[in-house]
Figure (cartoon, rainbow, N blue to C red):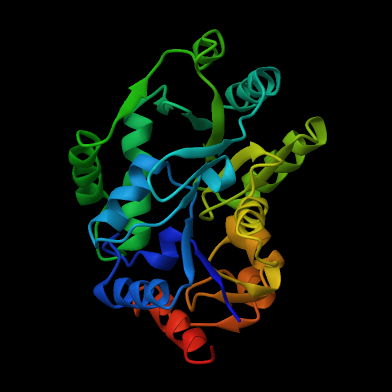
Length: 289
């Protein structure tokens, strides 16, 4: 019997308008009313993820930054797993020396060293989500969206490491050339640092975390808090950074829009994020309870 449902956000719980649909929200509420714990597991920060649930009146615990931070349903932080300063400094050097644009997610916000590059990356994301949108229009939309986002701009990321109150939770590197460039980069970083885990939430990025900051590890910790075996956990995802929780969950669902790797790994495949795949998977499991 499923006692916990853990769902990814982007490409999974969120549709292409980047909101939780009414159908998905109703399915989540039905699960909660039946005593099933629903938890979101996302690469987003808490401040980016929680309002999307609140917009539908949903209250749930949150695993954020791929497992680097865990919050209870009230928003209280339960766990934090940062990258050590020494390792972060070395990764910064590797990415900078090879000319990659990257962003740093700290415990107090997102940091960028280039507003122009930040706009460009958001524009690429928008065109990927909405192919009918031209890049020029996407740049305009991204520029407007930036004004609504709490981004901290710095000249040098090493400044963050000099402040004892700041912690590096995740490093995101980008390349429009995709895995062709990013796979060798990942291999190089991991060869130097066994304390890191590298995943991705799209073909054009890699997400660098502490090796203990993984969605699967965080979901298992949450399940242990509830004395629930992983055989009674259901996980839903679409991309590489969801693999760890799909591997550990007793019941795993891949989205219809998931990567081939995720589809091959998951036990079941549901509909796409545009067609309420999360809600359909939840109702399918509840019908078997």
